[in-house]
Image 1 (cartoon, rainbow, N blue to C red):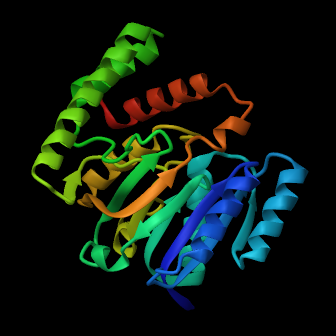
Image 2: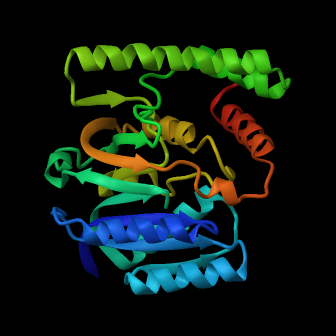
Length: 271
């Protein structure tokens, strides 16, 4: 088996422009200090996008996997399975095609060889998406659950607000203490770095029953259950253009989010 420092697993859906940008940026990075391989899993949308994404994958010497559109979790699990069966690696990155690596200090993460690593993720509006949740807040989750269950917008927004306030306060504390790394509860799903150890412990990493949304919360619960720490670090910086693939989706995203959250909550909580 070939050995790489990092395997990138990227699930695409119709969005060939962003995957081309991601691969071009990765290839042109002059300060890359690690060996890598990219696996592209294309969740089928139409023949035109399939053809274009396959051409891009071949151009950049990526592994290309054609897949039915069974969701983000299923696509990532397929890519992770391919990586395990075909390569040896130290870390595996699950990332969206609409992300761009600005800084990747590989040496800084070597001490986290049994962890999940959450980089600094910055949106185009300068919003920072990590840490997603500093700590587990069961009351907030329960309020959001009843909000989705009863289609009650007030409960839903109130539960979300509690988490946002906690996140805002903890980011201020972290900044005042000048902390560059911190153990957190949950990381944002657009760019997740798994150590090989974490992959082995959590495999299969994602829940195929979750089509889209709530992957981060499900992963956080699974990591906690298996004793895998999630570490935030700003030694790795990623730009997230945000929702590139969702802009192409014809699915009712609000309803998919509701179904995913209800499934996730019932899975991890006794009601």
